[in-house]
Image (cartoon, rainbow, N blue to C red; front, side, top):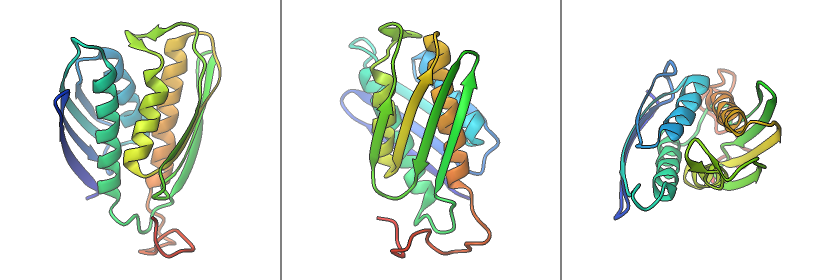
Length: 196
């Protein structure tokens, strides 16, 4: 069973997160941020992961620490659940439309963290979140997951639709990249013989 449970506690947040890569797309979330729960549910449903997140964060300050620490915990859980990453497809990508919006996400579970985000927004907030936290989520996730993540918002008018397309695309790309390739067996998907 490729799964992991993370408890990340700081002076700002207390995050309990469980991820099962062999799931059916079930999400249980209590982040204190309805829009973040909505986006995480899309990652779970479209990635076919089971994801449970419970957070007590300093929302009296602002949503920043909660969003950042959930992304870090999710990335750490993915890293642990993958183990040495033997047998995985490793690379996945997805274009996802949401009404008038279209997003693209590509991931390489290479062991080398890097994030590139290209996103534009109509307003300063979506669902109560500052839009600056959306690229920050992707960057924080990539760092902790030890993954190369490229997330690009191609177009759209409605910021809710734009964000939803991005998180659905992340789920779809991760689903493709984390799959076990029966042709590979227990081999590491790298010419180096390891993923660093």
